[in-house]
Image 1 (cartoon, rainbow, N blue to C red):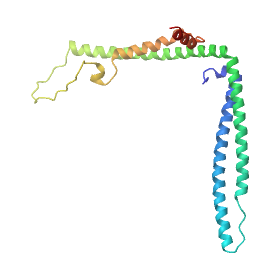
Image 2 (cartoon, helix red, strand yellow; image 1 turned 120 degrees about the vertical axis):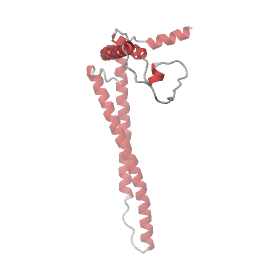
Image 3 (cartoon, rainbow, N blue to C red; image 1 turned 120 degrees about the horizontal axis):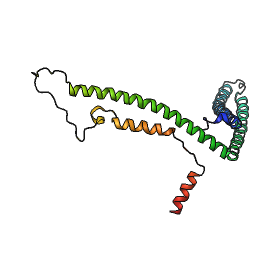
Image 4 (cartoon, one colour; image 1 turned 135 degrees about the horizontal axis):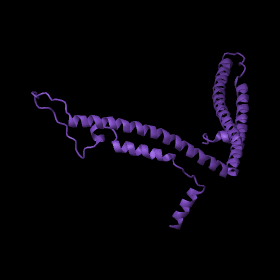
Length: 214
């Protein structure tokens, strides 16, 4: 969630790492509990069947395997419960840190937002220059065809099939590509991301207040 600024907040980075590590261990422990529960159930069925067969044959029943597995299962379940509580405590510590450092974190997020906007704007600017160069070459080729068309061979063939396009003729419905203006407009909007932006605290609260007032 805070990947862009986590390196600037060592304490938050430590808390996030702890929560992530405990979450991973909790998942592994949960899988182990489920696996042991399944094995314990299977062992119980096996022990009961083996004992019944032995008694019917006049033999001494074999040693049961269920008790050992049940003991492991109970131990794993306890470990899982402890991990769940540790994870809840770690999440609580992280939540308190976020609340106590809300202003600092919001400021860093605003800086990261502006920096990423500048990166996007720079990339979009390069893309726009390439797009405009592409269109200049395209325009020059079109102008050449219009002013100095290539000689046409006499058409002696039969009638050709005709494609009908319903509605207005656009670059998109003729070629399947976005219109030239649409591409340029999108890139110019991305370039504008490099302009100064402000992430204000309580912006959502102000919007909600405005709606209530209305």
